[in-house]
Length: 350
Image 1 (cartoon, rainbow, N blue to C red):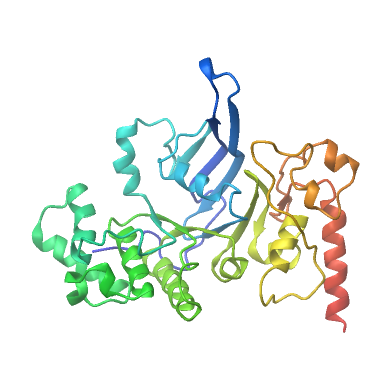
Image 2 (image 1 turned 135 degrees about the vertical axis):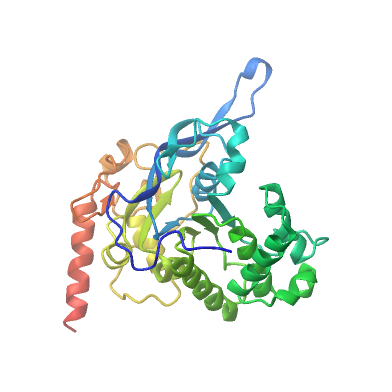
């Protein structure tokens, strides 16, 4: 039976970290002829720093191709970093042998985007939930049955539904099964990779509320990967914004949504279908640049209405956390955040 790792409402100090990602880079060599001549380097992730506290939900947002899922796969041990290190609960996991991935799986699990594609159509729900337990050394039949039944109840399903196959469930129910599979090993961290984007709008709120309930009940820590800032705003304690393999802004969720200081963050917030904040924010056009041929200077400069010569010439400044916990990688961050604050102030007095 699952037990809470960290009771809801417990204080989380700055030193209460369960995960630290330090200068993470993942580069993939592509192409090349004889002896590797002409080979190019895809910098999928390039110098990412992240911290996750116990019982916290960190939102990791950005367009498709920004590197969010590659960060997740590195944390799960499924992609080998080019450089950097990942510290999990005080232990450096990037230097462990590949055989230790089973131990890592008991600590970090993932909920996938498409619940139907992530489930084996030839396996019953019972088999889907039992197999991870057996692989990780749980052999007592009574314990396996008890943990499967308990987990199904946790996610809002009935134990008698365990003998059905994935096609016999709705999309929302299949995602509940995916959540149950992620939690059956009693992990401490769950990475949610677009967990509601494949679901009907009417079902999304149910799954989001289920994830929040499980987070408090079981003392879980989440990394919520999404391009939908509406979902991230509802779930996250802190938010990190990725663009072309780098974090360009991070901080408390309220600070990010109410006083975004990077033009890319402003554009993402402006794209929320029904934004809560109506101050005029930056919009952007065009697509994400080719990561094999990134632009000079700031990677966002070709799409940024605030861009100046320095932006096109020099990369953004080092991402440094301010006293308020807000960090931005932008040459004009102070000016831009000041404009947002002024616009919000004018709207409040209308």
